[in-house]
Amino acid sequence: MSKAAELANLIGNINAGGGGVNRNVIINGAMNVAQRGTSFTVTNEFGLDRWFCRENTDGALTFSQDSTSPDGFSKSLKVNVDTADSSIGSSQFAYLAQRIEGFNIETFAFGSSPAKTIVLSFYVRCSVTGTFGGAITNGGNDNRSFAFTYDVNSANTWERKSVTIVGDTTGTWNIDNSQEMAVFWSLGAGSGHKKAKGSWDATASVQSASEASVELIGNASATWFITGVQLEVGQNPTEFEHEPFETTLRKCQRYLLRYPNDGGTNGGYTRYGIGQIISSSETEVSIYPPVHMRDDPSLTIGGSASDYYIWNANDADALSSMNVEGGSTMEYIVVNCNGSGMTAGRAGSLNAYSNSTNFLQFDSEL
Amino acid sequence: MEIKNAQYKKNPQGKLSSIECEIDGVKWSVPNGSEGNRHYAEILKQVKEGTLTIQDAD
Image (cartoon, rainbow over all chains, first blue to last red):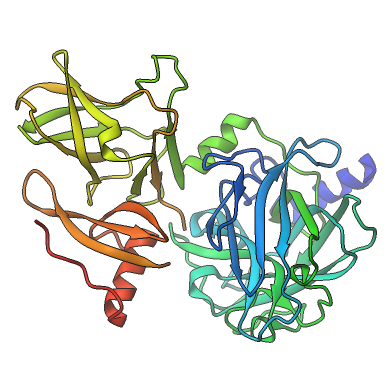
């Protein structure tokens, strides 16, 4: 895009109520943040931060972070078809999606007469050419949907695509911390998950357009890459809004916070939080996340509880279980640590034994 | 989500503060009563559907 065209788009979008900084409601659109890891064969779980991977066919996919990228980017999200399914049933589907929090779409004014036109843009590279499908919905409400298509014109070549979406003046689009919008890139969808493109209606479970002619998962060993994803107010796409890595990481940590093993800085004995020993078997540890998490998080850990201990007064009391406290606020998280041989009244820190697989992971995803 | 082996856990004050369970083969501690938490919402859904039972706390 020429600079003149870029400037015209930006001015046009500012006049439409968009533009400026923080105009992109997609988080981790450049695929740089990967707290959970970099390769996933999941069928119903998040992969790279904020990106939900779903596969419910007779095929199999791998989702991974990749260094194949267009100019101006260093990472992309790659989907590889490990096992093809060339006859997708009507209720089967596979997709990549981003679920968007209601607070972040307030500027769209959806569900009211001033609803604004928005534009989705992204870079895509695929080994298969043709017309692909996707959709935008009102997320967890799932009673408003808009299907779209995009064309891959040249195999294995980065192309930038954009889809302009008229604002939805009706339906439920709450401004809160729940999932109020979802954007889908279909990787294969049965007829039960498609509808005609280009308009809003109340059809549920939509992830693709009837006009889409390519189902990626039907092509053995096919590859599909995406990066530079942006969703903003306006008629035309503006240049992808790059932001400092730390800014994207902090945005991601509202939904997923992973404290890894420190890699040996302290001999691998990572300190996760400080607490008080309540009894011979219980210590209450407080952990202060760097950002307010979206809601009370769940906790999973790397390894087993016995890989962690309470360090207190030169004692190391091994743990048998760790549980997150319901009713923790979004400002701090309480982890109840259970073990034996503790001395009530002491302060202690929650530490990991030297093990590279240790981590604490708090999940408040949508 | 496939959820198995769900059991309530008490905090040091005796309150049922969390639910320990396996979700898709991974052990999780899920905050009890946090309806905005996706894991808790799914646990509630499966309990309501009768496909999941939460064991009492020890």
